[in-house]
Length: 153
Image: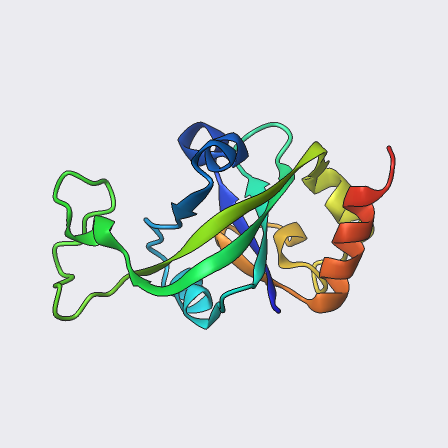
């Protein structure tokens, strides 16, 4: 099982939305590196849900990959902000995965706290200027994240 960190703005789609929905397509990704990471995901992989563009940003929940290799439908929808006129149904550019809600963490594990616990070489989200919305989380870091999220205080 691999681990990932997946970012979303809570006013667009947050952990509470996922909890209410149960599952969601992680669509609208328009960065090739993030798309390529999704292409390597497997059913059963876990993803830390990270709220971005909020104060404070941080890890707020946990998801599980339940479907992989899906074509992102938003690329074909002219009404979608993620519409890609160059993408064709016979040769789609963009993929997505389906994720299921597993847990909400309260309080969140803030970016400031992550920076005190991990180096930029260990955990990419603490690297200054990193804006990629999907990041791999090394197994040793995932273990430490679980420990931090279950520790009191």
